[in-house]
Image 1: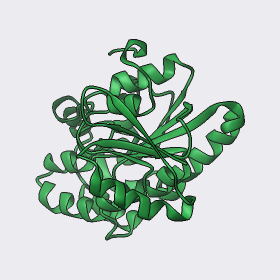
Image 2: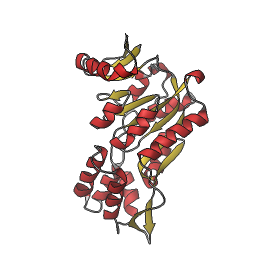
Image 3: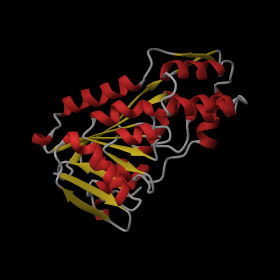
Image 4: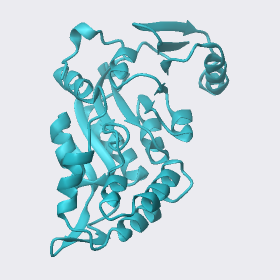
Length: 270
């Protein structure tokens, strides 16, 4: 049995359909998308459980920007770096190699550009604060995991209410970016590892009555999305959307709550 939770009007609808099992799901999903009106949806083989863990990507998911692209604008390099970012998010380039190349182009940029960029350019995605606040109010542990940088992710996490941050760190020396990174790279494998380890620590699963939830938009989010109970692609690249259990193409991040069956009367609105 597959349960399809969709939203295309004022509320969320549930459709129950008989399927032959997981092997039949790609065909089922293709048929579903061909016949449903445009909508945001979540496909599961059960009525969704409330998440005990929420792990999310940051850039173009919890915030509306790609931080490295906006920071590159302060160095007059946004077109060159944004082109690499787009190809990496589409899954056309190796993530680590693309990240190191982009960071290398920022060598010599004044460290003060980070604070300027945060203030002038970085904005929370619509619905992000309400999503995180509502999940936390109901006992969900929240993690922001990003292939971006702690210099951006830490203040974003503080603003949105995330309890843990996992990310890369730009190397700085003498008040300027060196063009390098500090420590190991946070890539798709690290995102997957965070989800798996936190799920085990929290004892999540159907027996516990709590599930894991993940959101992301790019190819490097696919292992995270696939490993979660409910992996939702948010206005995502095609490869990430195809790998997800659900997708939001039309609404904002509060539609994650609607797809999980959480009524607006229970939201913590921020």
